[in-house]
View 1 (tube, one colour):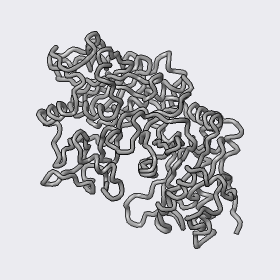
View 2: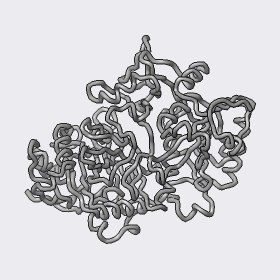
View 3: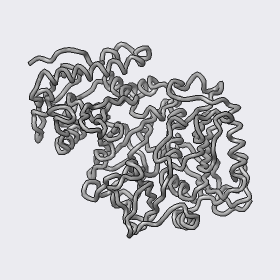
View 4: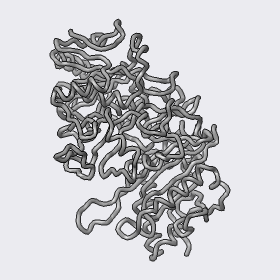
Length: 536
């Protein structure tokens, strides 16, 4: 086995049973991986110095092809309604077949860390078939000091072989694509997909399983910190403004996607960002745009023009175009990836029904209710004449990555909120003055003003009213914000239509929450919205 690069001399890939007649390259940096990826025809250089790769048929995650090994040690702790199982024997067969498949391949190895809290970090070895995948994960996870590589021993191993094809009859898979997670041995096998995000989310899945047992809350969220050390967490599904609103030049960015909240405060799981680039502009998101013109950034499924300039408006390969870059490419990013206990928790929703206020204050029980609900709404598809919004509930704002039951995460969050006296807010970045198709999008200026008032503490001294449908508190007036939008019903020309729409959404919340009712206490059940007619 030919080897190159820096590693622990006592810990080669044969520690996990891998051997190859090819070359194994350990911990190569960006320049070397550029050369490898271009030499092998895996990727191209853009006009501005970034690397661009295409992922083929898989341009996003394959959640239906993800499986968890059901063994005795995890069986009682995994939320099997949300996680498909394979047997230990099927995984063992798959691992043996991965070893056989890799036996002639050139391989790339990165020794990295998940988690900026040194007491809680997960040392992770990522073995990839593709050079650009090695650069991608090097950008996304935390890179140890070079000197630390001499003694690096992984706690988790990911083997990523896109050219491998799973066999449903032999491996228990659904298709030729498989993401198999052994939570006990901390091994993840990824085959049949070139989408690099599967590696990143595998680390998140593992930390989501391991940390709650230590009283640490893993979160799918962004986080930032003000000059006074006032940290804030932003939960939100895709399209709610999580990345945009947390990227505030006046505050330090801790991270944009995955964090833990433990005894020492909050900490980033990652050392990089994986940002969407569809319709990215230098005007709207200058910091992210600037990273796409830097050496070291990996662009995924981005179309280049004849001069190899990225066209971020071209979604012909996918709307899920991405860029992956180290966190230090962002000027105001945290150098440590750590912050104090948060002062504010923000839950973002884009309510296309047009009935939720632009901001509301939540009690700890209401925060748990809305966290478990994970509500946002998608606008209808592009079919002519279809204007009906579609409610989306993704529990804990990250259901696909949650091995444990949502109530475990919800209880952890509620306890942390109560212990640290955190203020919780629900922010609606969706529609006002009517539903999607009739109303208008909530003005970003108003959202930013309300958010700023929440973060600086001034909003707490406002006068609040209790929302008739949702039961949370809504400010009556806020300096610099049109008071009309604070009362959504008043912005609708047809008040009866508002009441019908509100009742409809409240009903959707109730139906969605039925599955959680046996797992929560009376205070959380009491925080549910109530079907009632608002007064004229």
